[in-house]
Length: 241
Image 1: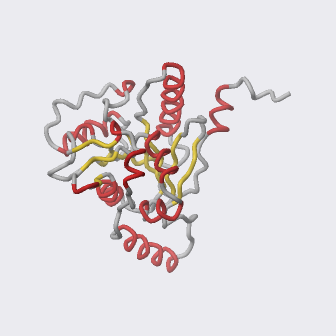
Image 2 (image 1 turned 135 degrees about the vertical axis):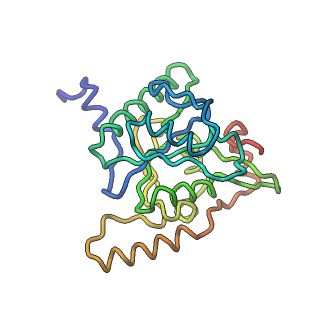
Image 3 (image 1 turned 60 degrees about the vertical axis):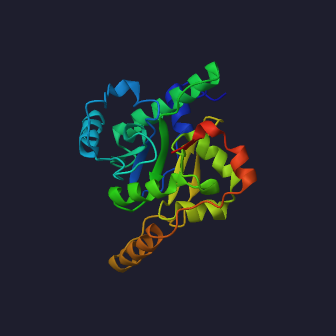
């Protein structure tokens, strides 16, 4: 008999994402508000910088990157943001994983629920460049109408993995080596970008990777939408500007 079967900590460990060792970021979706346990009130923050500082303090001083576009597609406080983590041993990561599992359990029990813990991203890009990439990824223009794609909701990202093939998603993710998301089976799954790789040793190899990442970061961040794919994407996950 498996003695770990009834141990919640062992179950959590077994379903955790398999990380490669690259720099790690937490993607948070505050569309319906920041995680309640953080006790964040973003209303007083009237600038992007103030919003970042407020959230950085709530996430125990971790570097936080928020959207910086002057013309966001939706209310700035509800746009996804990044929390830079200190590797797989960061206690903030443990807290985020527990939140994600609790959110998933609530959604399964109630049929509703909010997925504020969106994803774990692995990439060697600077946090500012990662956010720049995300901002270009979440704007879609089907039929000439500018819309916001809520891929920071893990349920939406899981749907995208069914709508698009691996090669299309790889090009879209570009410099983001691994995108880890919690699926409906309560396990973390990974989608690889064009920069998928393990740690590279040596100065010359690191320089080549930096050049490659810069090229990928500048590449197009567009998914090949078709009318059929659009019809399968629930409108509550893709909002008009």
